[in-house]
Image 1 (tube, rainbow, N blue to C red):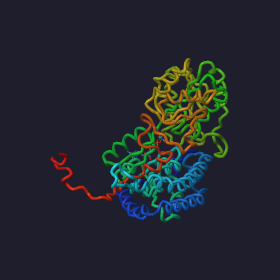
Image 2: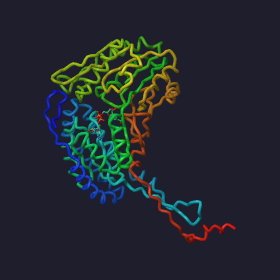
Image 3: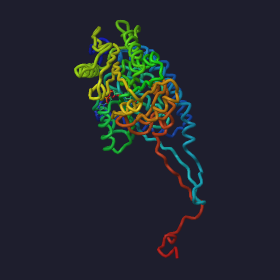
Image 4: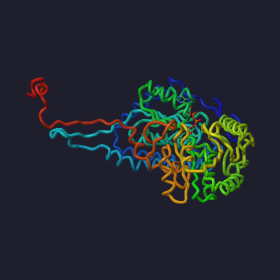
Length: 472
Ligand code: NAD
């Protein structure tokens, strides 16, 4: 399978997607290795994870370089590598304590002679299927806690961004005890993986998420689904309009808007609309594509050419429906890469695809509201419910609106904070996902089944206890 380079448009890389038989063989092999891994103490597993963090650190230059080719952007590739090393170290430090706290021993029950203990039993083999927008982060975000729990893990990253797999596997090879395999493959490989594992952790689009959920139901395994969003940002009248414009811009266009938690709809109070939109357009026009030098500029090319076409179609549809483009608006081909400067639109309506479907590009549709009730109901008028943001003069005012939003996480006086905060649990609302939180403690604890050990220290009851005439 030939792979496109996002900066040149040239198909300069190849992968050989694993077929069903290869996936099944890999799964069988990993299941054998998991028996040893799952029997280790949590502390011992953490020591191995720390060795893995060290190995990723020693391969960080080659991993970051491959990621930069996969994605066409450099600084965020380095952030992905550094963030992943941090995440491995964090889970290694936290897992033993969390596991101990969730495994109570000798708990009394209502029956004086019976006490219980809870054992956490890891799912033997976890499958991870990940998208192309943050290829390393999302390949390992679920894999690390699953490993800490004692599971073996097979990761199938996106076929759009597979170059980092080689250098990552070189790091994994330095930690032979770690039952982690990262495989090349496409959708068919992903589908085979769902059939081969005991738990599937999927990050991707709603459309594929539905297929994975159906396949997981068929295989009768749990699925954690982290899907798309159409995140709204509400800017209340008490907010500083210029600061809010800069926050809205950053939260909408980081990683060229190719982030699930990107702000994709901005709702602004009428009284501050004029200074807000002026500052937003001004700031949007100063954003530089990182072309021709990858190391200079603010946003990279589209990673996936088909996504660029979707984004342009949404903009064109909005313009055809009467929207006005105040900045950006047209994808530019530079050196074979596809770039879009931050695109600010007004005059958008709820019927436009731009306002209904995920855009996944640096596009900021702005609408005006007269009263807060309208803003809340417009923000909630979406089948997505991933996250949202509210900006106001005070935290309290913003929070009063935040709690009325149908979203799994709400940033207060900032945007897209879920990209930075890993400690708090959050559940995707609506079509944005299903299953337990990947963040916070449940990020680890979801990979266990609970086995109750129930001890009888008295005499076991005889059948006569249940005799029809025993109560007389
Ligand atoms: P996608 O759904 O097209 O692909 C995701 C993965 O699924 C890829 O690895 C692909 O090969 C695989 N796949 C395709 N068909 C499959 C099948 N039938 N069975 C199993 N696997 C299959 O998504 P994408 O375009 O790579 O990623 C972008 C999407 O991911 C956006 O919607 C974005 O919002 C979402 N996303 C969500 C989060 C989150 O945490 N909620 C994070 C990042 C991205």
